[in-house]
Amino acid sequence: MSEISTKPYILRALYEWCVDNGYTPHLAVKVDSRTQVPSEYVKNGEITLNVSPSAVHKLQIGNELVEFSARFAGVARQISVPVGNVYAVYARET
Image 1 (cartoon, rainbow, N blue to C red):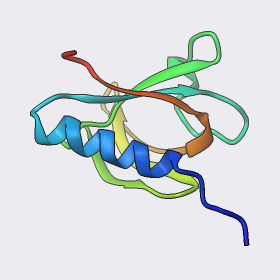
Image 2: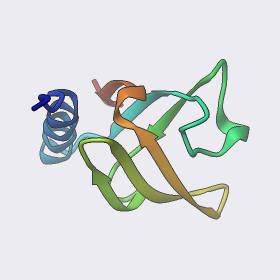
Image 3: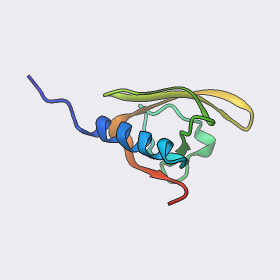
Image 4: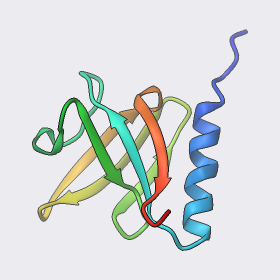
């Protein structure tokens, strides 16, 4: 039996810590063919996503994918990011 990575658990914990402390959580993501994000916001193969409760809808941080819907320039988009592509979780205010 293969072990599940600790990364999704750490992502969920840091996200909850940010929200519980009134901070704005962001994800820094490496974009590749498995990543569904608005390409017009990708710079140098990376994108930073605001995942605060006021910015996203139906956020799910699963063991394999981070998924949610969000608006970009007023247009609703479905976002899907492999957990392995998230290289940072941080609070904008810190």
